[in-house]
Length: 579
Image 1 (cartoon, rainbow, N blue to C red):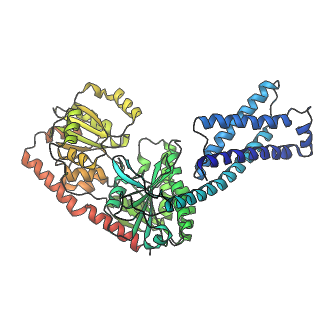
Image 2 (cartoon, one colour):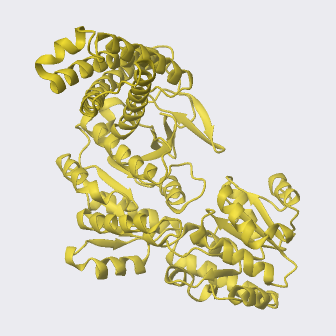
Image 3 (cartoon, one colour):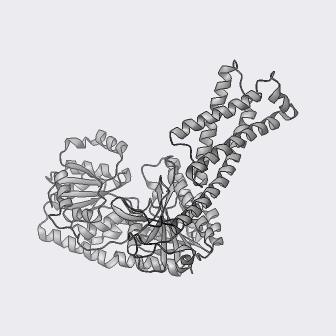
């Protein structure tokens, strides 16, 4: 079923739904008088208003379609948003139109409530039925296309990474990505794998963020050929593609603020459950949820996952409820949600020993089953040479020199303590620069500028983002020191990468960071002059002392945090625990 055909089907269905809702509301509100209300022109709410209702709806359809907003939602939350928005706008226009054209006439409040409620419920049911029909027709179209001359897979790039489109529900053929050859999987291939549905990260290929970097490396370092990762990716598209011999599937979610991540998680789980139901040959799937956002509804999903023979694993992340960006109500929600996720998880996979200890102490009543698997890193040097064009261009563009800059890498959010780092650096007497590689957050940037006036200090350099992994490693290797301000997460991949590549590492002294850094790093806190004094101290270290810290950091990674061991441990857990 073509996209345009689906859209037209929704419009026609909605017209019928609205007419039915209007008539049903008249019957409920006026009973035996409904006939007179419809046909007796002594009543203000008559058949003319029904025609007006439908005509205005058509006008709204064309207006909303013109802005690209009239869509058939791919999941329940998205459908609810579209339906409530369209119906609410329509009803408001009709009420205002009737008021101004019929000399102050107003609808009965009960009639308005009945019409709105019935039309929303019927519209959701109709959209759900149509969505399933459109999806089934789309899969049939894809199957026909695969069997015909259009079977060559599209190859494209996402953030400089080459990926290949997947058709329908097909699986990647390991080692064949990007060749353009036909991918032979179909129903015969599903039973060959242990299927792991990874939900909660923003998706791969990774840009910035702990879970994103983790999943990128977990899929890249996969050794078990019988393990198949399915990684959800928040997006505005509906792509399904192959990356790192894994399946990546887009989940379109409307941008509605803090609730966006909750809808994303629920939609991704719903999508994965439907996928498993379409392929009953998938045995004992693992649903691996990252973070504790959806505690209030997780028991429902857990029951459905268990009916599939699957297991629910959760990485609880760090103390999300401590993040500065949340107000007290959202923080309370996070705390409740965390409790419910711990209660219902079949297994908690903690990336920090301190987080694992916290889970057992705080939620002892649930006797949570836990295991500790840290994030990983590697100690290989960047493949880029010192005179590499990309590296030299980055240095020139940001007016930096090797060994003459401090480095910060991470999401541009308050809990990573950018304010403290910038303020303390500005107070220090170092002549080196501060290079900040981070994501965009214009509101937070403006807030810091108003507080600190950092633009007046020519040493502060916001360099934007760097998506090339080898280039980022080269930048780390040539930094004089790395400053790590994170304080609410567990083991942070950015810290591990810094210990692997940068000799001097100056870490915010919280237990998650001291657990990782041990004696291989130097520490500061948020007290006045703490970081300033540390910066001025390391400026006086000689080369032998700096090299000693670098050797300690690399030994720390080799001993505890290599990707090889991390990925092997995850594969072991996914393979053994789910049996």
